[in-house]
Amino acid sequence: MNFFAILDQLATADPDVLGRFDSRRAVFKHLGSAARRAALAATPLLVGGLFKKAYAGTNADTPIDILNYALALEYLEQDFYAKFIASGLVPAGAPATAMAKIKQHEDGHVNLLKGVITTLGGTPRAMVQFKQSVFDANKTYAGLLGVAQLLEDTGVRAYKGRAAELVVGASNGLPSSTQVSLLTTALQIHSVEARHAAHIRLLRGQTPWVSNSDDLAANATYSGATPEATTIQSNVDLPTKLAATYSAADVAAAFDEALTPAEVLDASRAGGLIQ
Amino acid sequence: MAAAFATSPTPLIPDEPVLRQPLQRRSFLKYAGATAGATALVLAGCKKDDATPTPSNTVVFAAGDVGVLNYAYALEQLEAAFYAQVVKTPATDFQTGELAYFTQIATHEAIHRDFFKAAINRDAPGQLIQDLTVNFSSIDFTKRASVLAAAVAFEDLGVQAYNGAGALIKNPAYLVLAGKIVSVEARHAAYLRDLLYPGDATNFFAGDAVTEPTSGLDRNPLKPAALVAAVQKYVTQTLDASQLS
Image (cartoon, rainbow over all chains, first blue to last red; front, top):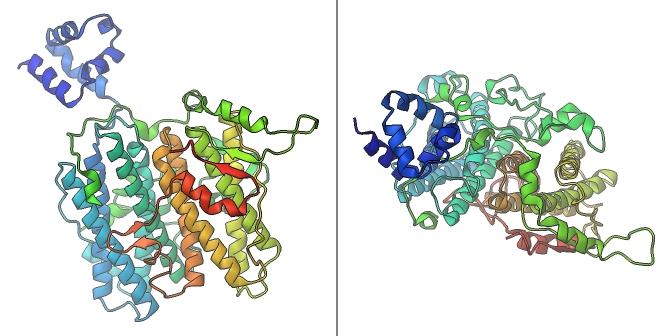
């Protein structure tokens, strides 16, 4: 095994690779780059452990990974609305107009994300289909509208869950102007998903914003490490620590919460809707 | 849109686990430094012969994260004041249930406003902008149509403001907070558009007027200077967002 070659390759992919070891192992602190490289290569048995330590806690997802994650969710929504419209269950008139518009937007998101991924040199992931058995089990207009609400509210939470990784200035190798475009585009999709969610919720007789008294409030879509019902933001207990006193319900509704990718892809949420 | 991504360097492994990066006062203050000078400028506008400082005629949003937070705080002040007036003097022709929802929206905006005030006072003491003095004389609060039109405008502008300011935020924790708020603003906007333009695919919740139909993107993410120009008529003080770009 050629550890010099491995380290050199890593340094190509991650210019800070030696710095990572440096920060974890003070012993390297005063050695030059060549000396650190030599010291690492001289201790092959330790290298595996060092790599684990050096990269522990770092998020390995690249911007393309994040975009492909978003693409998976958009494919899921696109296929759901295609099936929903094709089912003939959507009443003509305002509901049909709305579903067609939402479907058009999901088509747009899919095409946009595929284009961006390709432009960035990545490969768009394979298509995702909505699980037929779940579709069939909910196959009434009201039932499928409920699924649509869960999908849209999940989408809003999912985009929020990746925002921090797309902050302009993140060490992801992209030039600043591209980072600005990526984050802004993600935000522009995110707010449209929220508009969709609000409309679907209104069609279902729910508040347009997430509420503890929703008929679907107990669904896993609204739970998670930071549940939608949370009342603390930035370590501030909002009902009691602001200039006025607010109800927990109003505070919870005033902020939408994020879901991590693992939470989104859990079988209790979007993961259980993928064919 | 894809043309915006013409450069395609090999993506690198991200450097920091930003997803879980906590809100740290120290790192926040690092970005906050530029604001102190601007605050001094604002205070310099006070009358010298008056023991009680009077509000300056200009509100400056300084460069950096504190400036962005103050900018959001200003927007939320504006929205909260508008909805407080809507609830205080409801339109005579509101339909069943509308006042109840306006009351909820009013509370959401008041919470946003008070939250930003608390967060800025905690993390950047002394750098909070002054209270805005609003001027809603162009809005007829007695008429539903007038109130709805103004509300739609405020909410769409709010969404466009947060979407356009996200790229200015350096602290990931603040970006996530903005994300938690902007989607609620988008829900408000969608609801109000559905009230004002039911079934109208050009103008309803995500109609073509606000959402570009083929890309499915919310239109017009606004830079602060553009947003400020759009809302200036509702504020007595001069809003200066020229440093936020």
